[in-house]
Amino acid sequence: MTVRRLKTYTGSQGYVYQYYFVGKRPSVSTEATEYVFDVTSDRKTTYAVSVFLSLQAIAAWNQAHERTLTDSEQYAAVKLRLVRAFDEVEDMRAQGRRLQIDSPFLEESLAGLGVE
Image 1 (cartoon, rainbow, N blue to C red):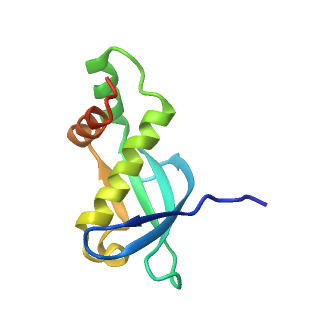
Image 2 (cartoon, one colour; image 1 turned 135 degrees about the vertical axis):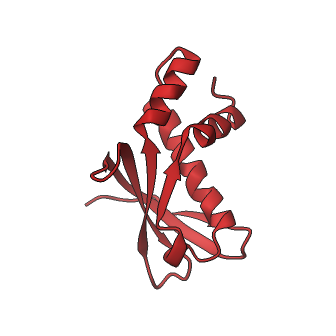
């Protein structure tokens, strides 16, 4: 039996989200890695949220910084994208189920963490 770490985040929209990481896989429809989280804001209904980290964005970051982005650093950017959506998307269940990470967001989020 897999034990998942349930995390809590209070978004600026006033919702308190609970979520946990389900896993990652290559995306079927895009050239990206898909990170899947199960999310709830009411403790009754749980839904999947996918964050797609573009392979092109990773390659651009690797080239610009002359090193390979680690799995932990990729996950950090993905988690930052998820919590930004909690802050910005009014209805996550209806509008925030497929989130994208492009090169500018990847650069900005990792720079904010001090990753160079």
